[in-house]
Image (tube, rainbow, N blue to C red; front, side):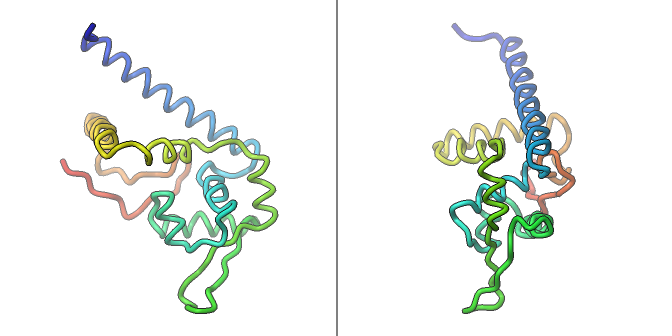
Length: 167
């Protein structure tokens, strides 16, 4: 049986509510339990077991602009959770190392929704990712926020430079 348009629209609205709900709940839980934003915790989780990593490599794996990553790393370094180490071979290259304190925090922390999204989206076929991308692009157009810079979830950090989407 084919769903009516009204049933599909209601389903879309409910699914958007679910996404906002889980992002808000997860962000509050992360902040309450760790004192970090979800994005900061995600950085630590990405470093745990793969440290040291280059800043650009880490940013790429999290789908963030390197300048956005630097801001996150600055705050994590101030908290003693990561350290920067210059490469001996090329002084321009900076590696990020998670500290013992950072590892301990990761071991006692909740899951990060952003990480779950990336883990769930990356293995999908190009066709499925295109369908999801087109759907979200349409929602962004409906809301009229195509030109809004994308802020990290429950954060004032902006992922710049923003990616231009086709109108």
